[in-house]
Image (cartoon, rainbow over all chains, first blue to last red; front, side, top):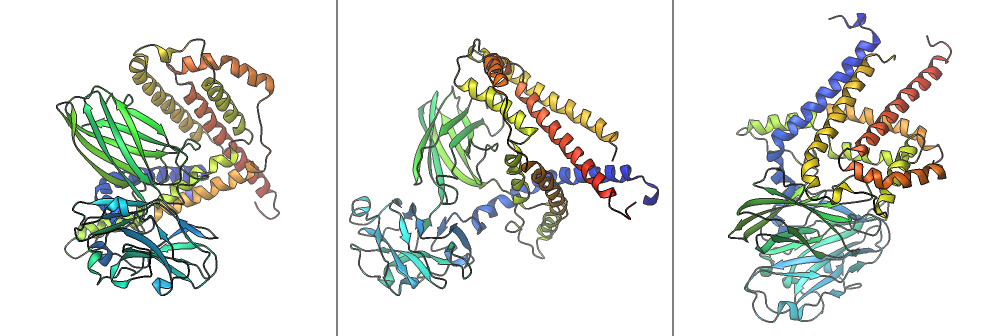
Length: 439
Length: 87
């Protein structure tokens, strides 16, 4: 094939076709290998740790020195630390203490979340969760300063006692800038007998379904997101639950979407999402998304909770939750284990490396429109949409088809068809234009 | 790697185009047009239930974007061929 004889137009068309093919295969690869990587995302996501590690097991196996930037400049404030204790040898209250230089000094130690009454005196027989609502404030750190947060079981806030130290992580600062990091380091006293069975979290999303009537269930969502995800200027605005029967999309999906506006809180919180529907006995999945109404994106950053629940005899009889990461494909962290006994994983890794882009590759496109949404000529379209939508929100419509019973059920499928058809027609029109484009 | 490279090229092209538009001043609709839209808004809301007018507006926005990109390309190319010794 002699490319020299090709016109420039033909070459560019070939390039566009290749690009479309690459995009198509990428989505194909995503669907094929999604299951392979999902589990690893939960365990080894060092870049976005969930701190959902068991001290006796995964702390020993995890990579040390994974770090995460939590705040830029100034003092570091960490709140909403969550500790689950499931060992029955604990007795007495628990204190969270902050030490500088890995506990060698107590110059800015402070006790937070005294939970004498919460934990009670005596053995803990079942798993109990303690959330330290009070923020832990680490002072602005020097270039070489390290700090540690440690938990100890004690009945008073006294000096550090080494063998009761349970777990910890460090906060330090970069030599060249002032940002602080949560650093996973070997702060855990592996010899401490009470370190067994400790779960240590700072970022969590959990939930369960509950309900005793088949027409009404609720999702109790317990969440606390990372500081960078949840603050006054960058925070999710709502939680949305989407219920699917038997794990598949069906015609009830739209009716079962429920959006709850989040409270303006930076701390850990529990939110109930009531869903009213005539549920029949069976298995259901509920996807819980954190969303932001100020952007075009319906899904906020990386958090997606999947609740699997069963309704039998009109009541929720079982419920379990899994946290998934929406950024499923991050080649930096999501390679499968490649070995001589698992060559499939090696090929998978190779394909992933070559064809699967970093998730940030796409997410950075999202912010581009914001820069031009008010500029001509796009600003006029934005203004029209805002005016139509904004006025509608505060106006009583002269007539509103939406208030007619069953109108959504009747027109929604047609509307979806029309939306699909309009985009297909426009795509065909665009392809015709592309063919005649003079470049 | 390959996909990421191609998408990165595309991203930088888009950023270049966006940067050109971003220096323009913000625009808003004339007051008369605003009030007209406000007047038809209730009817729009009702009609949008059965016909996706919002999709048409989205398509218009995409079309404007493509036209903008094409005109930018023509403008850059026009300036490019003005450079002496080229072509």
